[in-house]
Length: 307
Image (cartoon, rainbow, N blue to C red; front, side):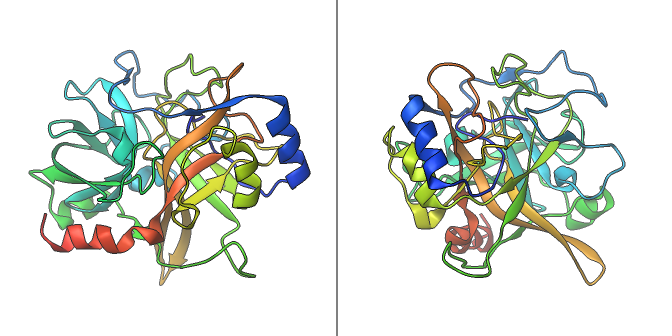
């Protein structure tokens, strides 16, 4: 699992260390969308395969994103280009910059890239403040054509995510410190593998924006820091976003009244990589996610409108 304009690993890094990275290499943005899907026709349901960093999810594990992760393909069902998260029986949340279109194929749930319930996209609603030049408010709600019932979702073992509403700030004493990320994207830093046939998950610690900006300010790119989450700036990081990990989840799993809750904190938007060398970010370079609590009201409005 690795991500360009996408990457996994969270942990505050000393500002001096980040500055050292910034001064020793030129950086660029990385991302992916339906214009450059990965041909996964050679993949077979398998227990092998890996992302850049992270670990392969086993077929019988329950503590993973496999119960809500949505794989998005072009209409032939063989070109995989983005991930998403199941919101309810009719909707999926992904990245607006994935450029999903009606007729694209959705496979919801499962640890293999061809696993899960299969449907098509009926309609796409991009956030009204989405700005493609800076990937601001980079989220979209997908409506599932001929969707399953709530009962069918439950019988398939799927568990929709819960949108985070905790309005934490980096200055707070109590705030999220570590998240789980998941994806089927490229498994090597050079993105030569294209993608993984099996879901991978990894951990990323939260990185202060003051640290991330020492890198992003070099590009430069517009930021909406209160509506974005930055991760992957720890020099010891081993997990990162890469090609076709966009739209995937940044989440926390916990138990509530005996049931698993998957709380979605972010949607993978882009990563920063060195201009020379690995296509996907190495340790010390940012992964950026759209911050869910800042777009939650809009998402709810779309869902409640019966759209």
